[in-house]
Image 1 (cartoon, rainbow, N blue to C red):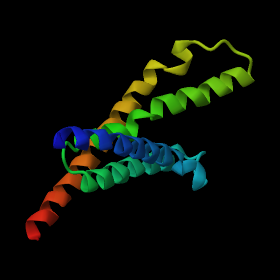
Image 2: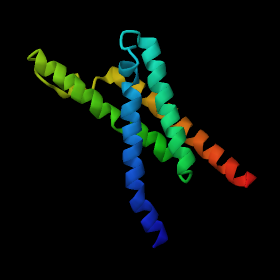
Image 3: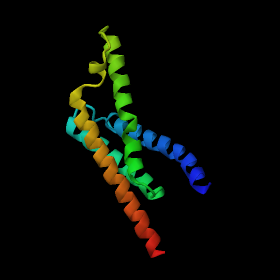
Amino acid sequence: MKGKAAHETDLIWWIVGGLLGVVASSLPVWLAYPADRDIGLLLVYGGIFVGAALLGYLRSDHPWRWGLSCVLFLPLLDAAQKMEGLKAHKRVVTFEALFPVSSIDTYLLLLLTGLAGGFVGAFFSFHSEEEN
């Protein structure tokens, strides 16, 4: 029963991870770097890494989940933004327009960054437990 109760509370952590991912993807806009693509990507990747590392530190069991949770909502957020733009230009909304094949590599790199952050956070969590 203890394992089941632990997994039921993980839903909150998955939602927190998703929100951290959305915040990380909004960092370039908030910090006024939407025109500079390189700085914007560094901010997004850094935000995903830090968010996943924070969750990996707080919940160190199965740290791969937190990297995935930080990236989970980003394709949906991008699709919503593209749909809004297509509707504003009165264009037909298709699946290929919302999820282009060229964006898959970006999502995979974001996932790898999140996975690395989750495992780094879990590593420091285990390391701090050993010292105590």
